[in-house]
Image 1: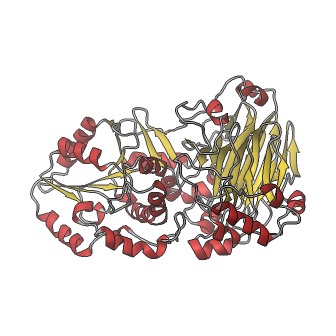
Image 2: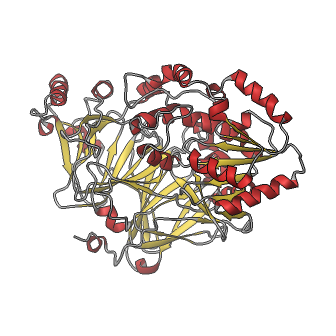
Image 3: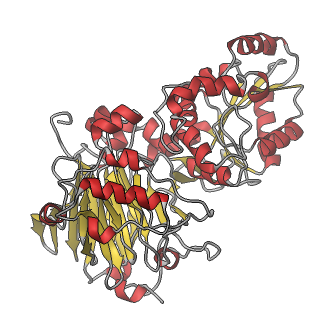
Length: 600
């Protein structure tokens, strides 16, 4: 079955590897270990230091076997110091330090740890290394997480790693947690420790040392390393902050996944399905920078960290810090199954139990759906909370007694371009046969599953159910009548012009994301006003082009279902149909942070 005809598309045109073309620095990139080591040796020679020190600082998830082998053979250092072997605390002491934040009885959730890399290191061993290295003759290489805390290097190489790739390596049991020999543990356990602690420590050190880097080493693709000068990365991030761009999307199978994205995005056929497309989650996505001779994949959080005012807008930066507050992703149940029935935490609960500054309010925008598709949203008008929770608990204990969802929950028919609002505390889940564009506040893993339709995950194990957390957060007043009146297709005309109209839709007024839909057949004016980053998706039409009225950036072409980012500093911009879409109706959905008393 092809999904293209009903979408009005002649052929798939989704760009899976969008990149930012960086002007300049074309000669400052090297690929392959031979050229990389030759460049590093040349830079070390230029330092003219008989006791040269090269620090290779590593983000979590770098494959040590590959890097250590390549660098030792290529550089032939006189001394090699590994932070993991020479400086890190014993695993049991690291675990003890992090125990309070890990929530040992919970397999998914913990509390965001206010940790730094130094918390993983033995202070006495670190001090010893700081004295040993300056006295060592010849070339010394200090390698691993925390290397920059243990020496005063002549050359600094930062080996970065996108979090999505880290998760792939955790699933393949290729990497464990910082300071631990635990790669064989369940991937969910590794991810939990990384999310709540390890990545916090790596990010803090990254932010503290960003200006000290001489080179960036990209080993996202194993055995295909790329090195660039750090100045080139810094310039690439600056240029990205001044123009429209897309993040590198990543796709993931799931037990409920469908087949729509496989066709539209032309994905490999080796996975059973594709459940998720994460195409604007900057804490986990990458930014692909094209320097002409080489391309470098860098965590997009680097852009948020480096240029928060230009990207987010000063009011948004002041409110959220260097944290991208808007999330877009796709959920595919076309030819698949129901999502789990779930609920998100209310704000006070999220702050108390997980250390979150804000929680996840979201919405489902229907890009496509099959006949008869439905969305579960809210509870039955006559719901009995005690009986519902009793039935949920029974369903977890006894597979022969499934949860009677039709008795306790509400569901609604779904059609293309419907918009379902999902505030915290509202029970929800897409039914089978939907392609959902999920628009939400950013928090990543804080979804409490109440019922998973009695199925096993792709690994053959039950997916974790979070009844205790869920019961504490359900808003029982969000019943069918309330949902129908307040949470479905809330539309308000805003403005119109020649060949276009704008309408407000999306999250409820109590939440900080505003969403606007534009229908257009001609040029539509937009303006960030320097206040908030804009995140958009082309939800109707084959192709559109984003342009600057003052030619501040090159025309930027986007395709159906692609999410793209307009930095706050861009100011005025326009969008119009392009290519096969000229003369046909098009639409975008746009999200931005509302102006509030905190963000004047």
